[in-house]
Image (cartoon, rainbow, N blue to C red; front, side, top):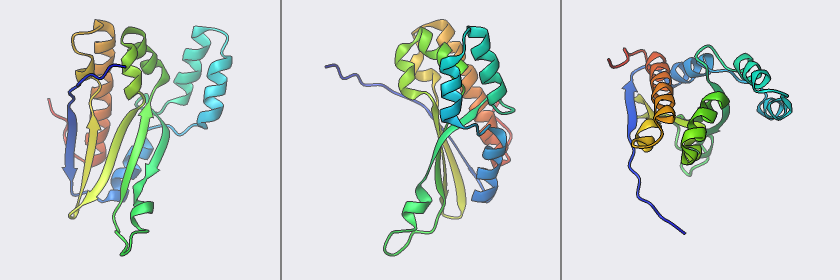
Length: 168
């Protein structure tokens, strides 16, 4: 057994846009395929090109799809007394990008698909994303470049959802 200390970077931003508007913007930006059906079709794809076409047809306008979401707001509402705030964790990704990450850096699979948290706090909405690239620094250059592109793609989507200009 091995335990290794890792460090990471969390991209966060806060917006005055409503929780519903932010979640709606993310929902609009990513595809929502029937994931079990997609995984079955991917397994049955006869060639790498067939797999690529299948995934490209399944992803949203920014190349991402939603694998699953966890709505913490449902559970918070059951507190005694109830906590009334939105909190949703999205698991987003693209199997082709995930392949590029894991091919060159197998441990990258522990962070794929990526996780995005949208959380209401004190009258604002906070978005958080743990970047993929910092965990791959010093490793495979192709995987690192794929991770950087993924980070940029996710962060641009979050900025758009929050109504802010992405950092340069």
